Image (cartoon, rainbow, N blue to C red):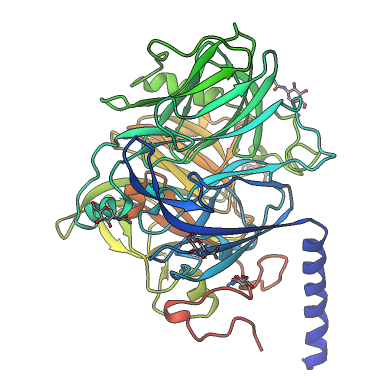
Length: 541
Ligand SMILES: *[C@@H]1O[C@H](CO)[C@@H](O)[C@H](O)[C@H]1NC(C)=O
Ligand SMILES: *[C@@H]1O[C@H](CO)[C@@H](O)[C@H](O)[C@H]1NC(C)=O
Ligand SMILES: *[C@@H]1O[C@H](CO)[C@@H](O)[C@H](O)[C@H]1NC(C)=O
Ligand SMILES: *[C@@H]1O[C@H](CO)[C@@H](O)[C@H](O)[C@H]1NC(C)=O
Ligand SMILES: *[C@@H]1O[C@H](CO)[C@@H](O)[C@H](O)[C@H]1NC(C)=O
């Protein structure tokens, strides 16, 4: 082919690529990441701040916006931010986990360029390296519907991010040391609501008005129950899906999950407790915030209202009651897009079982017996530059092997544009929570015991929710359907952070032989290079 013939389609594609991005607005953020002293449980400790804030600032955006987030790392360690639930379509380079993106060295900066393409909803960002998440560096992300797209409820009088999570008094370097020495973490010391301990956070409401809370569990391991004294909550959105508007008096939020609820300030004007308490734990940790009516003349008093503690059936029943509103729009006016997930045959079943064990006398956690260890080079960059010996596709089996735990850089291969079933089996006594970067998946079923082919008879093939994080109850399974429509190297992980850190994760390499920009973007021009990727050319010459 002559150089001219080659140049024309390439230029055309570039043009298409440029116009697709240019239609949508750009939003610029400049973040300075520093250490700072915080007092979430009353005593001073070293936290990770963004622009001086803990938690970090919210990202507000609208469907299809292009976000430019320039992150200056003023810590003394490499740093990365990942975007829980944001799909980064065609662009896993911006995913901000070590398998896809080089860390920002201390004293340096990197601009993430994300397009929140075809998404709405409530999500959060967090620092993904080392054990930084235990020190802060997280914040809310909201993607609003475009102006002409109907939202299935009236505009609320207020719309607040509520980040809940368990918390340790020990700092992230001390916690990481415990794990690096091969031990388990102790039970957390407390729970925070928006970075504050008991009665620290406060929300002021006008009587009679309705408010939206975007609740995310940004903690390290505990499922939490969330409730507002004397008020009911109407669930309206789960990780980008508008739900059937069901009313709950309390809501279980597993680690890594996000929910939007509406509540109306329709009670006697006074102050009420907002409560988050640990679930499925023998010791119950509880914290409160204050719901303050603007005309209140009575502060909160007495014990905060109790909630469910160890009951698993209660939680499963609530999970099954969370359904998609099939007539409400998502990012586009046609509610379900061009196909319905329940009408498509899956082409493959992947079964993933978690386990815990010792390797060389140290605690490790595994999926299908493989405990993930990072390579010396981000896997996505090794793939792009054809650097051999960094990872092997197929280094994790697509079904449990039953063998003991061993270490490897686990990467599972999958074909672009296939529609697959993934079954998460949990034979342990803890609640698991799994997240897949780059995707929203349908949670079609969950139940106690071992999953078998007959379990499919009870799948919800009508109105399951599409989300990016699902729980798996103790000695239970959860099944999901995923349309593999996003090429890239995507992190599949436990959101139980010590388990993720000690190996309970792998990468799903969604692959196509196509090199078209319609399928995947090239490596970003500003990408940092590290490991064996140093010195490679980012663009074909
Ligand atoms: C970040 O904050 C630190 C501490 O306040 C300051 O020394 C540094 O200049 C800031 N960097 C940027 C890029 O703003
Ligand atoms: C964490 O605390 C230890 C003391 O327990 C201290 O030596 C270390 O510098 C602290 N790390 C950070 C990042 O503040
Ligand atoms: C670092 O920040 C500067 C602006 O201060 C920007 O021009 C540059 O592109 C950023 N570097 C990266 C790698 O994004
Ligand atoms: C579902 O969405 C429609 C369309 O916006 C709305 O009118 C209806 O109230 C919603 N139904 C429920 C149960 O949430
Ligand atoms: C799914 O598989 C069934 C049974 O093999 C077949 O009858 C049906 O046509 C398939 N549906 C689609 C949408 O391919």
